[in-house]
Length: 277
Image (cartoon, rainbow, N blue to C red; front, top):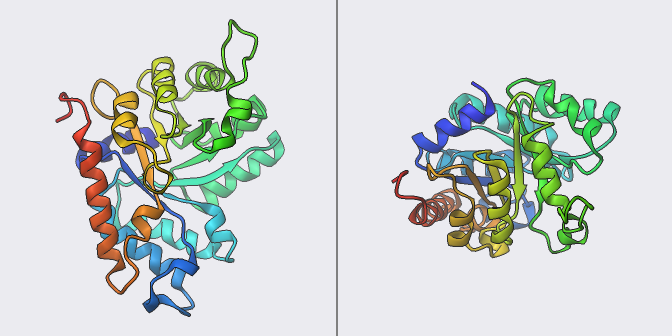
């Protein structure tokens, strides 16, 4: 199945819009993992195994592995998810953005080396910087649109000159029209800006939206779901990382993460449309 199809099946099977972000920080690992050679893989694997039936996706952040020379752990982790939890798509959070020749290599990295089901991409260098990802039919290409960081508005809110259209709106229009030849696109829209989530939803119809910013970043779950869900009560990949990963600091950290993920899923589901319930 394609990324979009797998995601839709996971929304339904697990009754979940929750995505667990895998951002390992060894300084925050529980004491039982201290000094362990394979701590990054073990930590992430145990979180995955504890939460897999509560989520619609996992989202490993590549810098959190590469900074610790743990790219091989990332490869093993994604392979583990695919083997042990088939049907849960893996989004490689890489935010790559470069000229075409380099973008082709980043696409190879994401889809051939790491075997990710989707990758986050920075589209602000234009068409040729995103086209190489579309060669991989069925893979998801998740474009940064309106990001959750405080500085995102420095550029993303600028008017483009087209009847007052803002830059993030232009990205959304391109994603749903000219760039979405194979139905591979999704968009990143931060939970810290629910009015803009609603605007993007208006522009792109049922296209999936990856929404970071709940949990430690303080995004409002009710406002996020109400603004971004489709008429079916899905359409969202609501990502939480630190609030779930570091819910516990002792030997029972994986169970603590499961409890936090279960609570987050339940809170998200409280605000989904009646049609889905």
